[in-house]
Image (tube, rainbow, N blue to C red; front, top):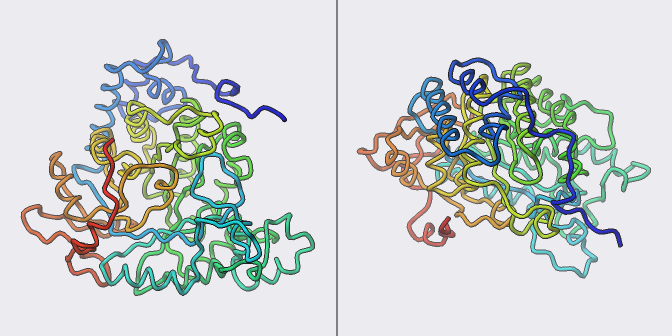
Length: 459
């Protein structure tokens, strides 16, 4: 049997070596000049002239990024009242960084393998979202596994049913499974409850929604928009460099495919976010190249509202279990990722610190490293939890007001697209959401329901 690849085996064409200097890169960042990839590498590494992260240099990068944040967006820290409604964990793409998925064949009716995963029908999705809207949320985020029975709509289903080699397009009909996810348009229509904002359909899901056809991404996103899609989460980006994707997600959409799908979403008028998932096999050169591709995409579209760095949660993932990686990013790398993102992405206003990935203490620290958004309430968050993350599944508005005020910043409830905002006075409770169609300022969960949520683990 061939020995599996390990961390020691990895070699890349792109390495963190430059002809630039740290001091020159930092000076350009402070002056507000547009940074190059080499500049970003110097800032990420705190200088390629030495080994490891230099703490004093790191602090200077963080200071420059925090100053830029204050200039660009001020002292507000934003968050949103949202729900995660991921439709299915069934997937057979095989990304090595993921433990959210469950093998799709374990969902089939005739299997003897018991799955711990789930698939929701459109009716179940509607019930979940309707309950959350009644509580006051106004955004539903939905990012799901690539279930083989998922089709874009009824027309797509007919094409897939008649496809001569369904295995080649990762398709099996719904009748094979205990529970059918329906179609993407069914699910989006079901989640479009009482004016809630639907944030869904990553480029990877759009790729799945067009398989077996010659339809353009514009056609896919136009049909999804007609069904109720409002904005697109720019996840599935991971690292937008092919030599990294070949290691961590060889079956996933390519870098060019991801960029084409995102540009198509913008072309039909959909707003979007963008992400990076770092701290696994990539190096600082790959991170810098990724940022350049995001910045170039924003130059072309202008539709990216926020950038979301996602620190790799390594526990329980195949990359860790197969010894391809020995851990995730350090705290210093997390801080530099936020800071360099702020300094490099001069055309994206908002940088998010994810308390789900970093925890409360480090998440708050990142708000002083260039970040200005602190995610949302997230009534459910399965992806990080299943990968081994130890942080909880819910944040109340009272939590947000207390945490943000504790660092001297201004708590602000925002809409998904940042168009609507409510500045919250810490001295005037209650602090519940007010922007949603049924929000009235009351807490999203009762005290009894909050006690039932998972308590965040110590970092």
